[in-house]
Length: 439
Image (tube, rainbow, N blue to C red; front, top):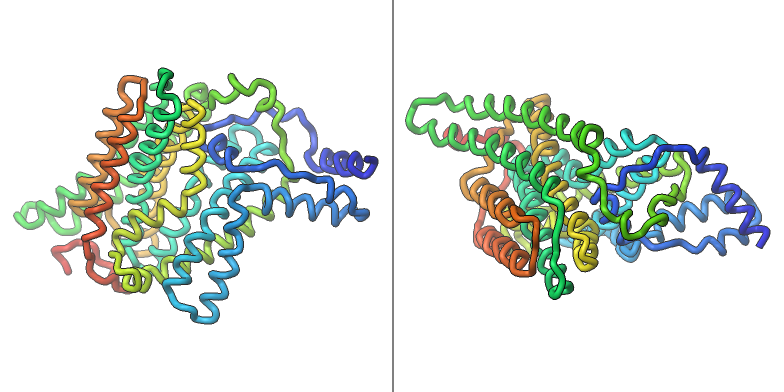
């Protein structure tokens, strides 16, 4: 028992002072925590050497502290499959599976760092790293000039969050609580809906510009220039959203979990040290980058091997597998009749991708000399517009039932069916031009 107390004392030394301000419990962090499991440090306490105790405790908290730990072996298998040329389809599948636990662990590690940096910096970390997997995949695809993969993967993440995640949550929550009235706070949903509509406008304008080129009224380069200007506007709007979320109207976005769990949430503390969390975060990011490179490099071969279009894989498969942990957490809280958290996960993630990740990719492409605009083509933009509008109508009254979830899910199935039969042209690695009139 003395050894256990000794380990606890050492962990408290690593944590530092406990006078830090309380960390903002957002829906995203609460959703991720639903897939974590408590670690038993009794075995670590029996190790004599302090360094080994801390190392084993870190390994247990980081690698075994999630219910998705069984998926970690997919990471070395993906590396071996790539090294020994097992086939691009195997490399793609294993890499995609390996990204799921890594994405959940990045969320865990940013939350651990936030305990030491305070609520404002912690909120910025969560807002920036919440969709790190999508951003890294998009940047690798951008580096290889696979513009369609960038656009489709980001579009798929937005559609997945608005229709699949939110629809599954409302359906499961409505069935599990069929005799209860399910209510949620509309304030957060209204803010996210407004931002999504602003993002939709920034996508529609370049689309209309490209269609106007054929009438001779607009120059072909105008859509690209408008897209870059709109991207700057979207980033400014996202910064204003962060100020709104973290400072002026923080109460709109704080999780309601505290009301039910009481002191358990307020007493939550970091389980690993700051530098340990930072080191693990760097390591996890490196592996995410490696697997993302595998995914981007093998997506065409996987498409040919499985008989699925690249559009379907980018828009449907990538978001579902890559965000599996976040999606599962949203459904779990919906089953507990905590819809504010589920809505915060789905709408918050969709807003972050639409207003931050997408315009950031356009700006990065601009810096790299790549012509990437905000025109997602007619079918993709129409699907995005319909998803945003049907979600806004679904959430307008502040109540929920299983029928709303069922309709959202069916809408997602209809859109997915379109991309199953859609066969896009092969992606050329050195295809920098996006405007169809110039091809």
